[in-house]
Length: 190
Image 1: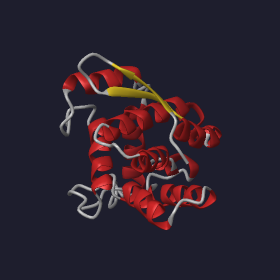
Image 2: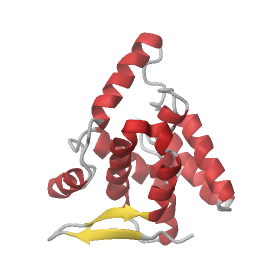
Image 3: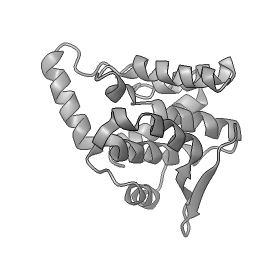
Image 4: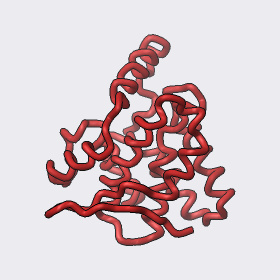
């Protein structure tokens, strides 16, 4: 499977990937599950994807990043849970099996999803570490740049507006805190 995408190049900056066929086809399957969070989640996915692909040259790694980005938080909506890593991994695994991706590719995508909220560096996969850092750039609203220039972060965030995504996460966290006070952040790992 080859990734088809549309990118724009801005002056003195990395290109911003505006459209990716793999991401769009995956997210369209879950449009009903996402409901009115479809666009906010899609924009989050594209922000993370752009922050991750800036260091990638291989078509295979681009494909892995697109799949991981599309699925990484989807379990919040498909399983109505804030403990969403395993549901997200399961959906990604099914996608990989359906599309006959290799077991090695599938395992790396699963690792990217499983470790994207890890507090420590991912040492078992450079791609998973890159993905973790990219998600952190977006989760921190760009305050943690992980090597990206502020202008690039701002350009990506302007292209793919937040549309309430971070506010949704805050509300989901608070709801989970009330339900599970001893485990308010089940997706965070060390």
